[in-house]
Length: 187
Image (cartoon, rainbow, N blue to C red; front, side):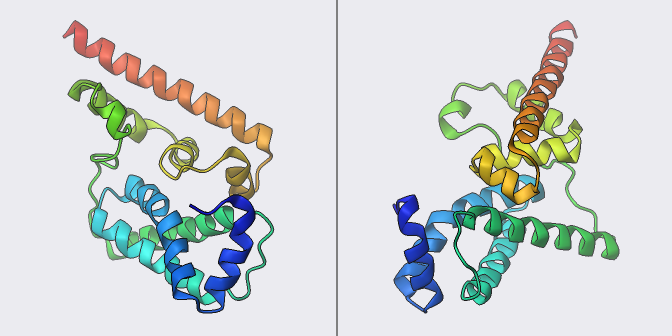
């Protein structure tokens, strides 16, 4: 895995047409971009299509990109824009989209072994009830694997604001899950 101080050289090599460098860029960031997109689309094929579009854009614009420690923010901004473009396109064409946004995305595999079906269902339902801004912060952090500073750069928000939003979003999520699980126990 490339160390953070090696990223500018890796990006420069990829921009110059080095296929091994480009492969490393895609291998390093592709799974995180895909996980982020899949958490929103609940459609692995659509998430893969958008991720490919993201990396096509990166490939064409990488020569103009100047690394200043914000590559991930730039990459996820492209992913977020592509996702929004696709969602707008789908709304215009009035094709129904599966409403179970997080059906196959939830805790990591290690956590999933310990989570019950009811807990996972409560998580999925709770995520759907969160406002989009809260869900975005949680997905970028926990599905996209972004650090808070990277998220602040991406969303053009102060770091402290983002930390507070993340904390509040997790607290809302915990409350929604608790209410859902509490309701099921009383039924």
